[in-house]
Length: 478
Image 1: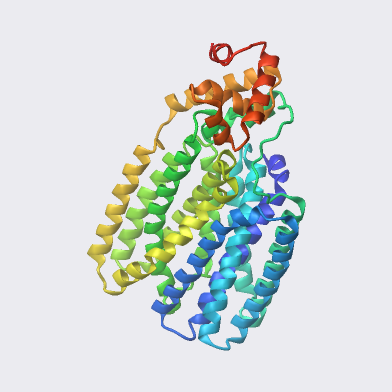
Image 2: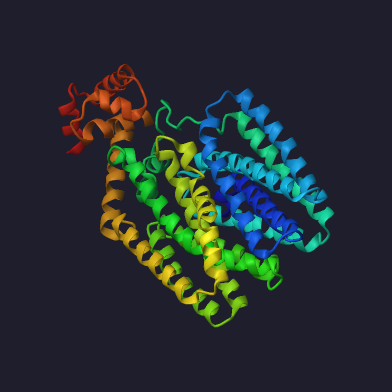
């Protein structure tokens, strides 16, 4: 496993740098504003910059379709703005300027985060230990932030450390833009599919339930899966953001220090989550996340109601590591199977940050009014909604359905290997044999011309020694 993780060292480093800069920048921004405003206003401003980052994540997809020279130029401009933003926060010229520069910088961080998540997503799609890689990357980012906070107590040293991390992140993103890793196109190619284990992984194989993808089962299934996952992440985020606001409020008021040792529990839980999620190729990932969510929510609310703020913080960090690993890995693994992968790769972080922006004001009002019973009631309602969505989306399907999907993936991989089909031809094969839709509609689904689809289909007919779509369907399904 260690050797396989080493082959993805670049993806791990890129994600870790993003987490360090993002979390470190958020901490530096909050600490700076705490000198100018009340703890409640700090929480509101934190929600504002997180909302800006969510917009940035969503804007990466259209940005990824621009010419490379435009992306390279924008990365240089972003680096200048980023360094300027750190300097402004250090100098503290005016509150309004710091708020504006915070929004701009976190918007740019969102765009860069989208680039990092999409570039990494393309590399780890068929990786057996993808969730563990995400967990280790997040843990590394947390660890770097903790060390920076402990080693650099004065603001100048902290701002320099943040600038160094930002420079490294810009360098990584510039490499992505220059090499084409962040192009907005899908990964499909017309090269022959490799045999054996690689072919098995490409079409699902050991990761069948998560990596087989929408187009290998039925049209637009990927979009449905992505939307269901979005709803789940949004509902869970609403719960965790409310709890996070309690932590931020206590930190800004001096009752807690979020940079202290309990924060390292985030790193520990993220690694543990990755290891557990990867069991049996992530078949029980949703079920494990649900169990952690149930137990942690009960424990956190019990700690908060009894006045044990410190223990509430400990439990919150333990649960948060699982949740971050869950939504990051889920979307990164799903993205390459969607029609707009550059958009979906970082959607987990985007949804989480967007929820932080939307819920910050009402959750803050709830906390400040001391409506403990109401807060518990809201959490219970959200949790019931999460249960309903988990069941409605089929997230709890375990052995029977998953084994059937795995068998389908193996059959498809074997057929593709036997007749030497390319990945693109395999995609065409699945779609033309799934139903009786017109070829024009299938071509539109694949974002290719009708002529190109017919060219692929002719090649499939020739390789499989068939002459009609009905004959091909019969041969594939029997």
